[in-house]
Image (cartoon, rainbow, N blue to C red; front, side, top):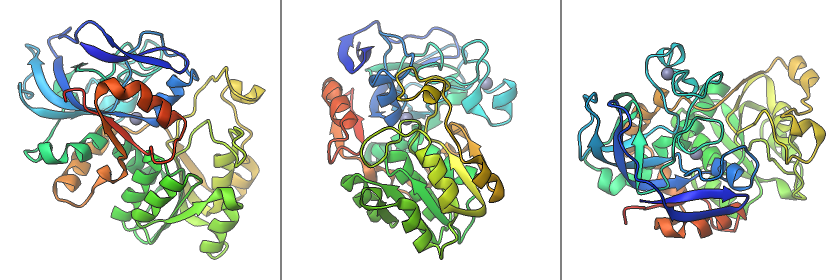
Length: 380
Ligand SMILES: [Zn+2]
Ligand SMILES: [Zn+2]
């Protein structure tokens, strides 16, 4: 089968690789019809992770079930399913508590959490490919309704970014009527904005500097702040009577940059402390890593940032972090899409066949204007 393979820093190609197949009776194989390129794929693309050469990337996957293992009960050949990027078993101590992003069974020994085609998240191949092996299929497959053909580009966002954006707002503790400031208008930040709207936020403020992303932020009804034209914190405070927003979301991650384009790994976290009110909650879903050998400074190489802990403590804020437990949210978010109350496909800029994936990685990585979200159609 054809698949997008990582060969080294900024070096990916579409190659012929062995077909995905049933390896355990609890597996299914899915023919991928829609799969996305994610901002976190770029961390790997840029050589900023320990992902192995030869890995097939792609963790945001949707497709049609092609083959079913003997021990699978509820998933049938021909079903359309969306796969959470995190692979859970359903029966470990963390999955039992709904924390499927931290599965102990599917993870590498000594760690928690597994995903398709992802650094440090187990040996699973990704879905930027014609076919994908799905472990523990009864648990991991989210069934999609009969409008999947028309709404595939919405449903595919249930694999990661819509639940991840929603998770950011839940970690931040948003309540109806709250104001929220979101740093980052990439796909996850925009999904956090849509999620905040659905939950009744009174004001959604999104900070970024890319014109195409800021335009999308406005399109979803948020107040867009361009931090290349002045201090974002001052602008947020001016919009919140000098107190700061009721809660905040971090959707940038460890490679955040100042407006000169220099990486300043603590910038977003410290700006959030300043632009969220005293006692407010901060949800952090942008990716941070325990090691980053290519980082610009000695602390960041060890995954550390200089955090304004004093201000954070004096303000009595709280922070919650980590990857989204997709299965905690994807069923209900699917129902919002089916009912026409959420349309996450609004952020898609490019829909391409698999063989154009290498060029798409380059354009997305260059933050080329207009490349806000790329989806691939391997079955086209
Ligand atoms: Zn993703
Ligand atoms: Zn588990």
